[in-house]
Amino acid sequence: MTLAQRPVRTTWLLLLSCVAATQVSAACAADWKVHEVQPQLQTTALTDEDADADADDPAFYVDAVDVDKSLVVAAVKNGGVRVYAFDGSLVQTILPIEDSRINNVDIIYDFDLGDGSSADLVLAADRGLDIIRVYRIDTSAKEPLTEITASDAARAFPKRHSTDGLTEEDNPVDDQATVYGLTAWHDKKLGKAWVVGTQRHQPVVGVFSLEAREGGTVRAVFDHSFSVPTEHKGQDLWQESEEDPLADFSPQFEGLVIDRVTGTIYAGQEDVGIWTVPVSGGTPLLAYETRGSETSPFFNPDSVITRDVEGLSIYYASTGTRYLLASSQGSAHGEAPVVADPPFDDSFAVFRIGDPLELLGAFRVIATGDIDAVQESDGDDVISVALPGFPNGVFVTQDGYAGDLNGLDGETDSTNFKFVDWAAIANSFDPPLEITPSEWNPRD
View (cartoon, rainbow, N blue to C red):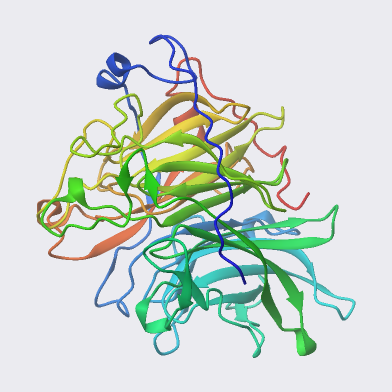
């Protein structure tokens, strides 16, 4: 594997007036409106008492035969994997093996197992052991997920960049510069199943392909990687500070999604912004910056995404319109020191996918009844398919502070997932976003 840095070309969205949709001027950003939407339901909160589970990244699974058997599969870090129905009820718990930590998950449909059969798969980034895990889905079973990771599956990232960004060195698993974010896509035209994983603490994204092995097992095999500079606009991304969050940076990526129409990877470098690159390889382009930091050489007051940019997901309308959703996580909560950047914290920016991305607005998930608001979302997913209880499609997001415990000071860890009717999001915009339920098949 080589992690040598490739040439990087940066493209910027035009800075236009406040009424333009492609970017927001400084005055616009200061007056940025975030639409408020209410969740329809939530899962039971996860705490340290629940096998040390910590909700992170969800992914939708649509059953090919009976849509009512569709599922939400979710990474819960030290707690392994949880599988939920669309009423928020728990279907299955998969506890991790020793030292395992499941960080992100995604779905592959109709993968050829090499014996004449095919299977739908869950792919999971095991950050603790640096392995891409594979689970087979069978909704006719009481417990629908069964692990089929091949015994000869290799580490995702056996090497890492040194802090000078110029050389490589061995990467001990214990240092946790391991597989972190993850997305997947089955390119049926080319007959290739791609898995993309980011490397924690590193400016690196690895691209893998799935390979069927004997006995119905599957492994991820390294194909290629891309990396980006560890300095941005004069800011050293290796710079760390435990006392001042405005001076604390990292070059790492996490949030990922692949556009199933174009095969383009959208990769969120947490402190810098959203990069694009073809899944088959190419030069990464910076499509949208975060706001950076007011005390840093890198400060972009025109952006509406605060550090960190986190979960990325795509809504596919039957008309061909595609919306990219990006979590503007922020770090306004938890134990001190924290930094608030209202109104951009705890929101989700929405872009119309095109060249360039067209910024349409943002929304946040607020409290309603006995369901609390969403703060500091790590991961989300969105789908236009009509699913049980959600005839208009659905958005699911992790909530970093389920129950808003202790004034959001982080002393008691409690996380869960909120479900939002897509129509509630779409109709909060003016003009409304498209709502096209039942028309898009994720298997195509």
